[in-house]
Image (cartoon, rainbow, N blue to C red; front, side):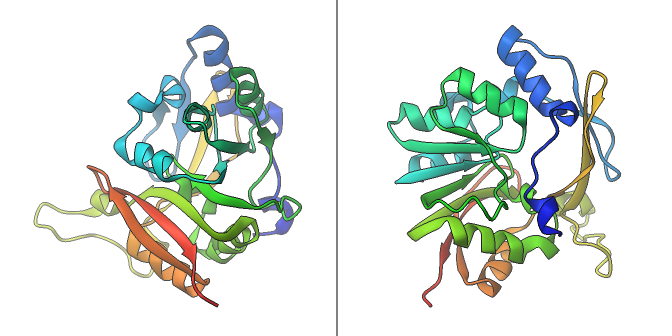
Length: 249
C-alpha cells in the first residue's frame, strides 16, 4: 500500500456515505445508501442506524465505550454516535474520519474535536490512551498484507500503556455447509478480505478493500508486530471485541 494512498482523505464529490449522513442529519431521513461487492449481492446500509444512541448500540459497542479511558481516539467515527456517547459519559475524545461531509456533521451535532484525518497519515502523531475502532473496526486495514502498516500506525499514536479496542466478525459462517464442513480455497485470498463500493443517489464512490478478520488471525498478526491481542467480548453472530496492547520490549 503506497503511503500517498493510505494517508489520503475522500474527495467530497465521491463521498456517498458522507452525503447520506448529512441528509439524514438535516432531514431525519435519507435515500438509499447502496452497497456493491464482487462477493455479495447488492445491499442497502441503514443510514438511520449510523445515528444510534448508546441504548441502541450492540452490547459489544457498549462494552467498548465503557472500557475506553484516558484520551480517546475514535477512528472512522462516521456520524459521531460513539464520540457523542463518550462525551455524555464525561470522557475526552477526538473523532477522525476520511469523509469530509461526515466530519462536518460531527461538528454540527456537537462532537467537540472532529477532524478530517486518515489514521495512516504519518503527520498525525498525537498520543492517545485508547484507540477505538468500531463498526467492524478492522475494516480500514483493508487486507492482511496491510497489517504491518496498521500496527505501525497504532504504535505511533498509542501513549505508554495505551490500548486499542477494535471489533470485527469472522465470515467463516458464509462458507459453512450443513454438515459443518467449510468450503474455503486455502490457496486463494483470505476469506475475510472483501471489496465494497457505495452509491448514494447519483454519487458513486471509489471501490475499496475492507477486512473482516477472525480473532485467531488478528492475534497472530498482533504478535508478529509487537502487540498482544485479548478477546474482550463476543457477540451473538461471530462478532467480537478485542483489546490490543504493546508487548514488553
